[in-house]
Amino acid sequence: MQVHNCYKCTTLSKTRTNIVQGKGPLDAKIMFIGEAPGFNEDKLGEPFIGKAGAILNNLLSMSNLTRDNVYVTNAVKCRPINLEGGNRRPTDEELETCLPYLLTEIEEIKPELICTLGATPLLALEPEGVISLMHGRLFDRPYGKLIPLYHPASAIYNRDLYPIQLEDMKFVAESLAKMEG
Image (cartoon, rainbow, N blue to C red; front, side, top):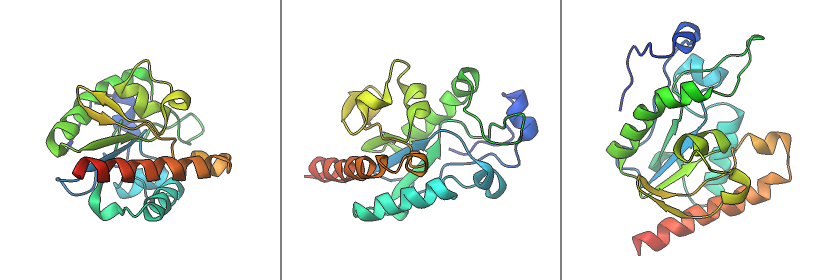
């Protein structure tokens, strides 16, 4: 699903450099959903290419997965910027505005597993979701099988989370292997 010339969020459409499209094979078995583009993603128009992307790539590699066979996207397609010019969490209104795009992506890709990366994309799909209670567990939902994960960037600020992230990513790989029989 390509999003072109969207102006539904007046603030985001005025401050973005690029609408950041999802990237990966259209028949990917795993879809990772992040929060929103950051500075690097906004400049280059590609999801998860900054520090968090490097951590995601490492977690995938350590779990015998690669970016080549997964689809990576964001709950919000344009970079939310704070007053100081840094990243900020998308507002509930921005999440709600972009949700139809995300649901269409899920419908078109038809992944066997949907993995939210952090609390924000989890809340976009599960308004009552709590990442600390749900991470690393498999849930059957009307839109597909969901495994919430901590956001890769959380390991930058809390190194103690990395082993948990790695264990959760290995659970993703194991879950996919079981589903494929």
